[in-house]
Amino acid sequence: MAGKDLEKGFEAEGFEHDFESGLAVIPPDKIKDPGLEPHRVRMTDKVPSKAKNAEVQVAAMFLVSVLGSFFALWAYVAFPITEDLSTVRANNLFLGLGMTLSLFGIGIGAVHWAKTLMPDFEVTEARHQTRGSEDVRAAAVEIVKLADSESGFSRRKLIRRTLYGALALFPLPALIVFGDLGPPVGNTLRQTMWKAGTRLTKDPTGIPIKASDVTLGSVFHVIPEGLAEMHHHKLEEKAKAAVLLVRLPQEDLKEAPEKSGWSYDGIVAYSKICTHVGCPVALYEQQTHHLLCPCHQSTFDVTEHCKVVFGPASRPLPQLPISVDAEGYLIAQSDFLEPVGPSFWER
Amino acid sequence: MGNRFNRSRRKPLAATLVIAAGLLFSGGGYAVATNVVATTAATEYTAEQISEGRKLFLANCASCHGLNAEGSAAGPSLIGVGAASVDFQVGTGRMPGQGSGPQLPKKKVQFTDEQITLMGAYVASLAPGPAIPEQKYLEATGDATHGGELFRINCAMCHNAVGAAGALTEGKYAPNLDGVEAKHVYEAMLIGPQNMPVFNDANITPQDKNDIITYLAYIEENPSAGGFELGSLGPVAEGLFIWIFGLGLIVAITVWLGAKSN
Image 1 (tube, chains in turn cyan, red):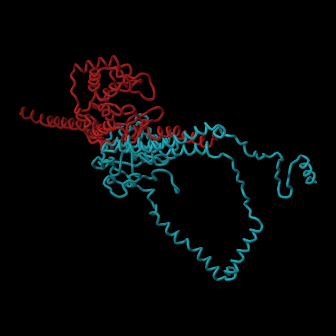
Image 2 (cartoon, rainbow over the protein chains, first blue to last red):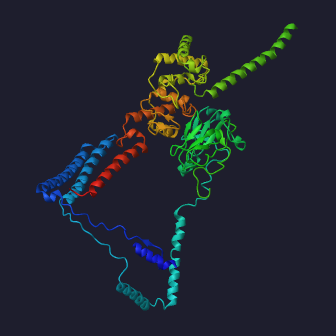
Image 3 (cartoon, one colour):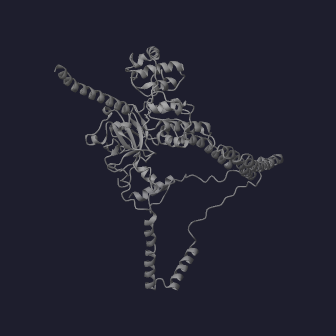
């Protein structure tokens, strides 16, 4: 019932409504094309003396450019870079300033010239329709048909199907070569250099650390024994194995029962790689026992297995279980029991 | 008979005494060697210096640190902190502290060098602790390259790579090291004042500390080769500058380019 009545109602209101293809309602007072702004005559077009001024201004900018070029040439000679590194500063500053002026003068001058003196009539370029005309479309169809009949693409099934097969297979060799872009990740994200019995040594010297050296409130930046002497993949290994060693009063440590054997006499060792995005976490506050990451302010509480107390990190820093060997040197009980550093796909 | 009896009685007693004394000395020696790795050859103080220092202590420090430096709710115990702590805290003006806050700032020094030495003598007399560093490690005559490497590993995360200071949590900060006396840099590593951790002589040897002091002296003497330092604070200062002035200039030029001429 309502269809015809509604249509009449809309027409009476002045709405256009296409009942056949949808429910779009197009109000009649849609935004009108405002057209071009009225042309405003420039001062340089009205007053000849203003045009003369603009001409001088443009020329002045080009002259600034010329002076800048000469200045840069002079600065290159006047401020040479010598053995003294601080001479780089004056050389770069004045050479750069001259070159800036020489290019900037040309640019500003050219734009000012175009804006004030070149013709300023407005130009409109209307958009053409995306759809081609009927004749063009028919001609295109004819070309395709002609090509098909001349080549016999539809007729010669053998050629067509072998071509499809060839096209489908040709990317395969490229896909296989992608596999050679890097070594397989394997287990490298889960393992570090630490093994049972690896001594904790000082970064960068590789000198082993005795438990008695780590006095209360001390912080040691630690690398595994053998890393200092490495020549290949040293940084890759260091980036995973770096450890921070801290001694706090035994009574301040609140250790979980299953991890109580991981510390030695109040000495604890934690991975230095932030679990957020992998910055080195090493800002240790001796009184609060907080470890702060300088990148995004994640804060870890060393007294409670480095749990996150502030910031975007979502996991505690992995703890390295440590003990002492017969000579009193600190050693690792094993590798970290979880992957160090930020989250990754399979974690 | 009695004589022989006596001798036989005395012998085992003497042996026990000798063993006990031996154990005491070796044990004590071991305890000193392990506990106080940081102690360098302690300066000898006279009894007069100690008693003068005690008077200064009672007048200026005891209200917080206790009449016998045993500490109170207002201040920590000073037993075993050594003369180095006194020299650092009083010598940089951090002590006596004025008001509480996240961190005691460096301020005008309140005592003369002589008074600081006397107070140090008193605190050092309470228990063994870190002593004032030897002059030979303070003359910036070490290896600046090695010092720079040690600085970047141990110090730069808080103090910034050129010691230009850095923020910590809840209002605490690692102070700027520009112009800090070599003696105070050395003492800070030795004692770990406030929230700074301790870097004892087993971790960073006296020669290594000298190298770090040499590195700091080197960067103080050599200006940055790369243009304006903007406080050497890195991305914060540099970002602020380029966002305000660099982007501001680009916006201004864009507006000028798009505007019609009069």
